[in-house]
Length: 430
Image (cartoon, rainbow, N blue to C red; front, side, top):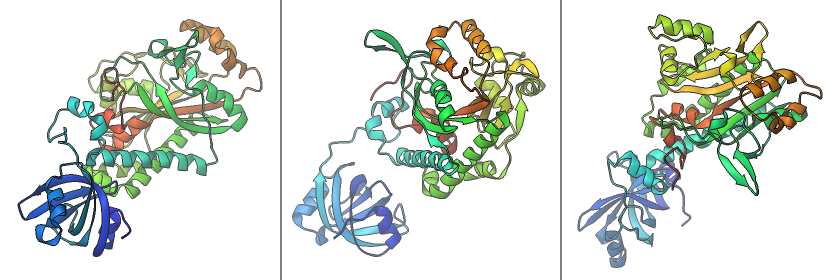
């Protein structure tokens, strides 16, 4: 028989099926064996009756442990008692590999699961998350392609930073000192003059000494750069992107969201409602009204972001942060030089900053002045400054922490579960 997926078998609902996969659960007696088979699509209960198969097959079934790989044939039928509502009465069994005793058992610590990450990715929970992750990536590509954006790829190894110097990962590049990229920002601005509307999803690296549930040292960065856009165009684009992602996940990942016990009602307002907008100054005023003493000019921490988001069921844009606290390429607001023309998009349910963006400074003298003020070697940015000498135009862009978006959508406690193999300050293997 032709093998089909478990999902296909369940959709068929009856008749003879041939399945293959791994043993997810096993129990039984000296007459019946109950195996829960899993593949990438779902799980299904399979019943082996000693009287219906050969002696060799029964002996093989008796030796099966969790994660053994098998092929089997049998009749599928509805059974309300079974985990997914269907059961296969097995008539033929072929063991591909007898697994050793599985090292992961119920209720193990987060650290043990991290040590066995190469095996834990097989769990139903991680499988569900990774499927949603795939949908998110696909939705991002679909959104930008449909709007006529071009996918552009920038170098991973770069001569200088775009954010704070202390968060750079240094690498030896032959006989020179180089760094792993924090963002495609500077190269994207150069490419924008060619393609005008560009996006990418690439790895970024931040050597942040942080052990929070929101930080990774290596993450996938969704970034956009657009010619002629101002701050409000960027926020409109960002909001439309987020809504598109949520719509795709709600449509395509109902099963996975259910496995994760995610309350989808918390995501539905995101699709229906406009995202509120406030300035940094208004946010500081709000925080002080709520009893948090925050002085103007202070960058907002997670605790302040969470306090701002109380009562909101959609993301919120906070704009015009203090210029001195921002990256060098974010321009001063002509109406108020103390603030930069920029935004952060904060996520509900305690998810903090999900997206950061800004218009780009087109004043070469201001860029040089800010770079020197931040202690950067201006020579490292010669190529970037050149872009301001030849036909400079208004433009802007934003970057989204894709794992932060996935963490929020899935309702995860930690960003570490939003990626197959997380890299953090203390975790670099497997």
